[in-house]
Image (cartoon, rainbow, N blue to C red):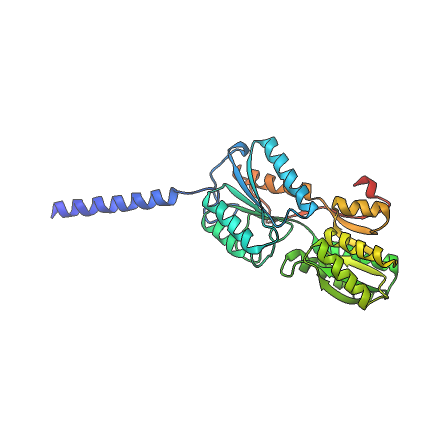
Length: 320
């Protein structure tokens, strides 16, 4: 009897020990992947490896972001691994899954699509890897923080600018981004809400944040609506494509973009594009890494961090 009791106690002890060991294995940053206030394993920046998934490196604005992340990480001794999703949601999810399998310490994701990225965010959650999102949000999963400009505010700024420059009730077109991306939804919301009753939005067509697609879309818009006086393109790549189509048409159509990318700033200097809502993608990259550094220093991180925006026109473009 005593032998059996002793055996049972020993088995219980071994079971508790094994559970404790399993719980301790694989901790990279978050106990449940979703709460920055949970206890974390403290690490210095030089001890961290961060996986970075960019939606597309064909967009100059995201190249600026990528370059700043690399530069800022190097300054702090952090190892970064960067992938280009090429605007392919399946590739992005696979890239993130690879980072999860590699057990990186943190993830920075610039999502192609706010719905499609959800499974990847949840996979990181299950692995206890903190996730920081840049420019676009995720519609599911838990993230350490989302670093983004206020796209609704930016959309309103764009509409207000057009009201001031082409006048109330002017006929305008809106070229939208990738369907499902939070930036598309929020920039459109801000623009449409402010424009209601002030501008006549005769058409809204998507060009997927792509310059070449925007060129074709704008050509079609001008043919179908030759009396438009302005175009709001939801990013600068599309604004550049739209500008090429407008120049070829010989019409006087005001174009306003969104991002503050170099290619668009050059056209603003020339007068081909009227304005853009300038974002600081370099700052977003720094803020994203700083959020990870704070987290691994045991400090709390705000769930949403707003990056600065400003209206850029020919009057102030030289200061950008």
